[in-house]
Length: 224
Image (tube, rainbow, N blue to C red; front, top):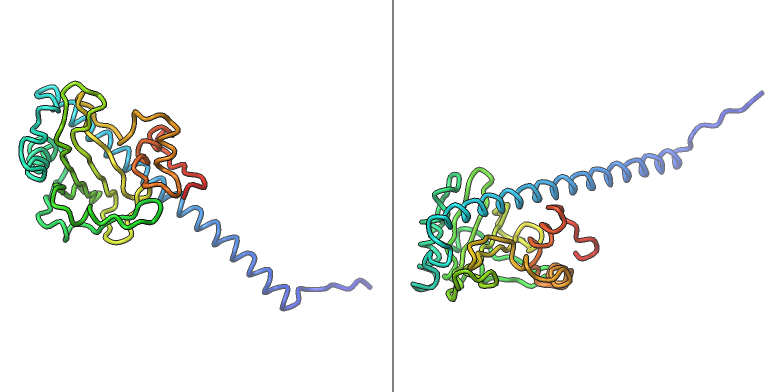
């Protein structure tokens, strides 16, 4: 007569635990993948929207003549944000008190960068149903026609969450250039410099440029 052996209690517990670990890992991976996909879509959406705004406004008046540096930096930035950018943004809401808009953010090496929150030379806004937070800073010495001249720094917080914002995850840096273009900051750097600026122990300022070069996919590998 053949004997049939069932699972012991310990074997059953181990089996259930292994199944739980596999399911949990699959869920975490899927969730992380979906979140990355949403970030990628938002980053691309922000870039294409602002690139189109800049191109249309630049046909009326060259970017270099928008008033960069004509006033105190904050006044200049706020004027440009309100006059040229905000009218084309969906449900634009100005942020009058920087401390109530969004917290500071971390660089990729974990350093706390509080200037985004505390310095008054960034003009800020919260935009649209995606609740994207933007901050614009005039760089002053903008040279018309110069593709390497940065007129202004544009910081995007794509989820507008106060607290542990981080460059390369939900905060990205773009720039207005003197030739009328709007691009991720450092887009015209050599590929090695872009990679170095978006690595584990870097500041993370070229992450938007890296994502664009990677066909709008977040591919940091072991850099985070």
